Length: 73
Image 1 (cartoon, rainbow, N blue to C red):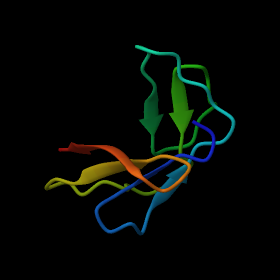
Image 2: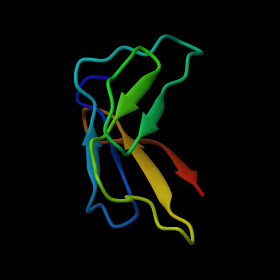
Image 3: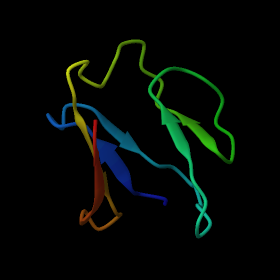
Image 4: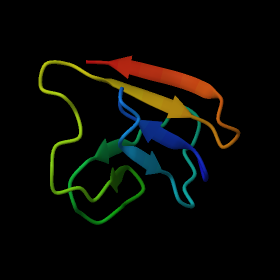
């Protein structure tokens, strides 16, 4: 997923995946706070909330900038 990114609705906040490989059928959890990355957990490093409390959408783009998926909450 190197070069892929996740943004919020406003696109103000962007998370870029560094060197990271996600196996087929596997999942990864992205936390917006600080922490140490593992093979199943990644940390964005913000000290503030990124997602709106009343709902937001996470947009996932591949390294070419094409929309791959989105998740509404």
